[in-house]
Length: 136
Image 1: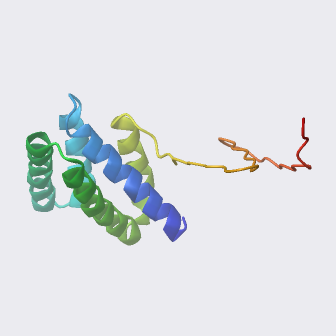
Image 2: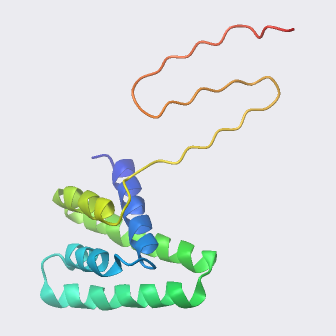
């Protein structure tokens, strides 16, 4: 997977993790991410589990966008590092994202001004040819 793909997947993972912190499914999500980030080491897994509990507490206490963005950045970096070191964990991360209730996804925004035209497709191949604008 390309570096950009790993970075996008890491951000999707961080988003799923941070998003799940305030949900009823948190315990299962937290356990899965702790195991993934623990890399098979029990002490590292336990330490990560404790860190993740602090994430939840921080989000529940502060409930600010600034805190959420900071946590997304931090956990995205940790997941990107993990995927760089252990690329075979990609499928595990994708499964955790799905378990958290999300899927790796791309958000696209498009703005058109004046006489501009746009075409957006969710998947597949699309070829667009725009002819001259018809007045009237």
